[in-house]
Length: 177
Image (cartoon, rainbow, N blue to C red; front, side, top):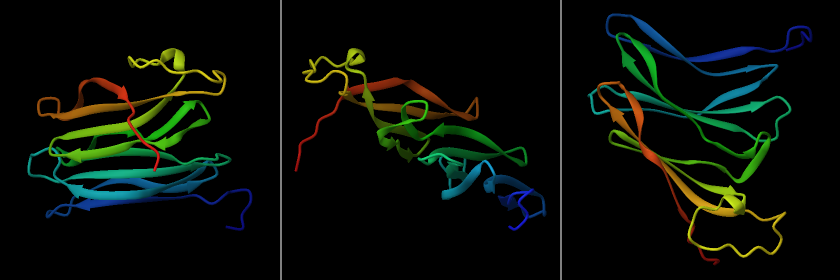
């Protein structure tokens, strides 16, 4: 911690050992001059329906000098004695590079052999795809809202999650309370 020529660096791994003593590992978190990555959530559950639990890991990364945290979801499954990534998705929402969306992050729902990811998309009103006409009061400062959902399902043959169908977009319905 006091060696300024070699900044602090560490890594943490999830190590899984079978009954025969063979181990496999997945890098979970770490710290370096580039930033800090930590595990926000780690679960072992059978989400592919094969009777063997998968590891669902949500990581948070704070890059050096960055103002917002980046979140990533990854699912690992046992494949021929090693852990293989079968799903990976960035959970951070941005307008463009370096400009965070007010919603900040996506919502994930993991059910039996399926994953759905939803988020509020703040888009330029010129790209608004709903059949409702937006009322522009100050077009340079306004954005339109759409609820976006992506669905992924487990494909036994590919042994990975694949997109079930394209993203769905619908108008946001809300009221002030």
